[in-house]
Length: 227
Image 1 (cartoon, one colour):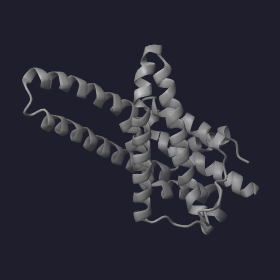
Image 2 (tube, one colour):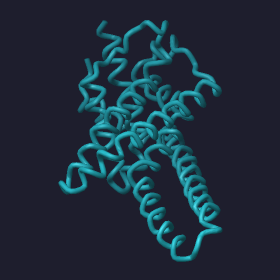
Image 3 (cartoon, one colour):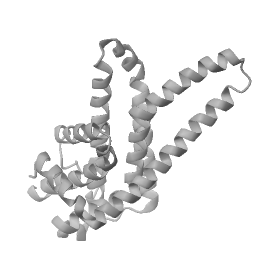
């Protein structure tokens, strides 16, 4: 079975492939467009909500709204938009990896259509937003520890990311809903933790979803070939 470090190394090595570079550019453009649209929505939404309030109240709420927007922009929104964008091109990323390393798997794979890709993107985004909002009260309490909030978000988002990335590589080869995923929860979580860490680092955050999808492909195919 291909190990996680080997899978990540192969994923980084394939960044030089012109097909991966093209997918990276497209996913980056979609990510930035979605991120800008979400930011504009938050701005105009806050403006509309505070239009009829007294100036001192609107200023206070505006400051709170700005903090919340920046918090979610840094911690959550970029991750949501990046993963939603890569879902559009997930099949393409996986196909490029399979074409080079696993041609037999590529021949037998099921092509995920546009409608299904959209649905998977929507479900993944809703799951990420819902879970992060759910843990927000705990995260706010942990602010007093100085590092507890960071650890909590890192662990939760590692779990979420690992699941999304595994499914990108796995669902096209799943024959039935009863089939068990080929990689375990520990490996899935470790992959998610690495990619979640990359999303915190400027520069690496732009390539993190591509690396994650490619590495997940190696992990899934390595296990499938072992069975």
